[in-house]
Amino acid sequence: MITGIQIKNQVENVVSAKVAVWQRELAAAVRDPLALMQVLGLEEYPPSPALPPQGVKGAEEAARQFRLLVPHSYIARMRKGDWNDPLLRQVLPLDAELQVVEGFHADPVGDNQALVADGVLHKYHGRVLLVTTGACAVHCRYCFRRHFPYSESNPVKGEWEGALAYIRANPDVCEVILSGGDPLTLADERLALFFKQLNGISHVKRVRFHTRLPVVLPSRIDAGFLQMLATIRQQVVMVIHANHAQELAADDVRQALAALHSAGVTLLNQAVLLRGVNNSVQAQVNLSEALFAERVLPYYLHVLDRVAGAAHFEVAETEAVHMVDGMRQQLPGFLVPKLVREVAGEKAKTPIF
Ligand SMILES: *Cc1c(COP(=O)(O)O)cnc(C)c1O
Ligand code: SF4
Image (cartoon, rainbow, N blue to C red; front, top):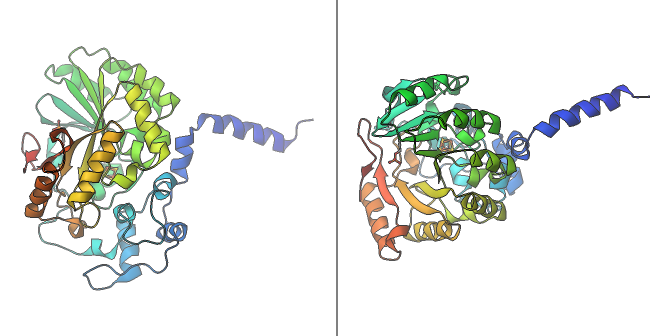
């Protein structure tokens, strides 16, 4: 006799078989600051450095404006009991974010003006950038997208028709960049649907992913994803995003990057220069070395986009230049990233040094 409970179990098994490990890990990511503190053995929310101590209340309000989100794999790389851990600093809401600072705006990059179709940004020659989704696997406190309400961020809709039509109609587009949000939060089936159609557009030579998932949720690089990658006709570039060597110091991250390298993907990194996270020559040298050990080349080091709520992360441009100069004295040229700023309306990232 089959009981109701057995049937329920069978149904659940069928459903869970379709949910990949990475999707379960994303669903289980920490969203509550107090829960994060508990895992890390931290007590009492820190008063913000150099600001009137609004303490917990300010931090709670900051978390309401842009909620905390961080997967356990990333948390496992944080030092226990250390408020100044460079990974924790990137994800923990602080009251400092509530400070209104002149020159810091909601849309510092001017992306809204570059939208040419649903979710398609065409700012630079030969390259289009697709805002494939508003979702990420981590919420970085310094992100310039922190003020884009996800429902209104114009991601590519439905079955990609609008984006594909635009690419088809513009033969000078030779590179398609999947960005977001984070494109790797999309299921393999949805990505496969896009690439199947992109394969038929002969003027597209390269596809590029801008993604933080190999670093923050490395289980995303699973067999299903690698199979999907193998169906792509174009050369594949993946620009990952790590800001500190400690982000790469885990077996799951190393395995993910090794698998991508074996799959023939060109791996690059972009980082953001962040006060209290990576604003020393030594931290940057260590990051470059750690990246190359996993066969990733440093590409860009961005100075902070001046987004409201992130002023406390800013590093003065003179200090940034000084740091990159220090890197050049210690590293081969190919391990020194380009220091750049995003300037609204410019035809490329603006080199600083
Ligand atoms: C950064 C960016 C690109 C890519 O620029 P590269 O210099 O090729 O890395 C493309 N489109 C938009 C809208 C961008 O912001
Ligand atoms: S993963 Fe990228 S897009 Fe998402 S919050 Fe972090 S910096 Fe922003």
